[in-house]
Length: 85
Image (cartoon, rainbow, N blue to C red; front, side, top):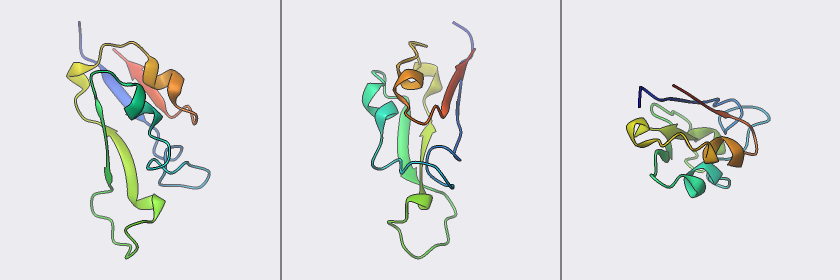
């Protein structure tokens, strides 16, 4: 297999207007068998309320584990994930 690229549109997944709180959704995390994604506080966040949904995001960290099954793309209610290779 070649290089896998996983993009997450942060404007759709938390962090912006019309987005969804990634702490409440997490569908990509639940459906990904090799556990490619992590949910974490946004690096460099300066807001004082750590429970603000704009401070959280999902990131594809271990893309080399991706099997390209497409479960994360199908599971995302915001259509925020694209997988290319």
